[in-house]
Image (cartoon, rainbow, N blue to C red; front, top):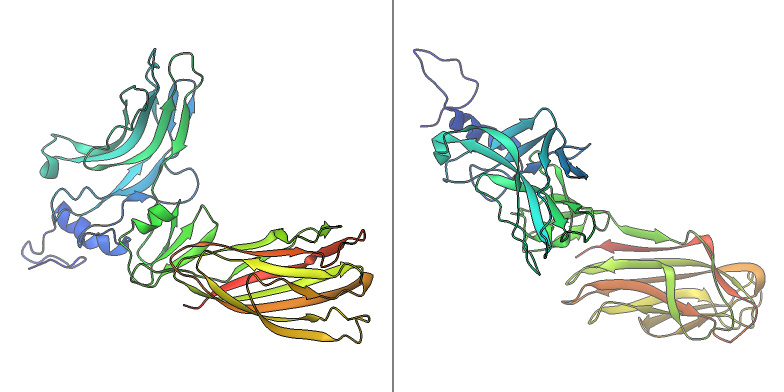
Length: 363
């Protein structure tokens, strides 16, 4: 029978072991795949356990973390604080080959690992030099904080790569460095991550499906002008990533300026195997007066090059396109492609702050 926390003792009961305390306090931590464990990592923010290298001196900043050794199924996770910076000395470079070294954060608990120790500390591990060196393994009860690329002697300075995993409270938004790190999580429906590599929040919907938590949005921060160009090309700003096996609502609004002789031609590139028919709305090629426009409204495939009319330089008009985008097994970019419909020495322009693209995940 378990002892719930925070009950006054009577006759010496309940009494709590350190492991019982750790097990119960795992409730406050993000799930990491073990029933009585937690996701191990560093608390985000500031320079928590950040590793730097100056000359041959390695410095690990103070910070707090969770370590979940999982040596036995009942072993609870450890809350660890490194209160002051710890330093190590980088080993001398090999004369012939490069090397990879690591810094790890490790907990020792004799009751669990028979180490004879009861402490937590940072440790420096030297790798084996070779033509294609590998990082040394991480010990049980530890996780990696940083990796050092150490060139051969005379090959330049060593470089440090941050390898800290992060952890947060149960229900918190977890920073991850890549899609691979996200996909390695013991994910549960409702789990949220923040992708540091693409600067967006994602939420897990089960069955391997991660959705963008908010609509993706991009706008034109500067004007793009194209002169005497009739072959459509990617716009430098209006592009967004789409995940595989997903459904999005796409919306794009363009502020366009240019001569009637040039007009505007628009198409899209989408991920391989994706389906996107656009509902288009904009000036017809015959338009001459932006206050009394003839409008074209059509349904077009993503690659169809559709021409919109312009009424003269300095008389900007707008074009709107909407679609349902259905991707297949390949992720990729959704990108506006455009050019002049007829070659003209007067530039056709998509103007700054007057064009945007959104993708909203709906399935």
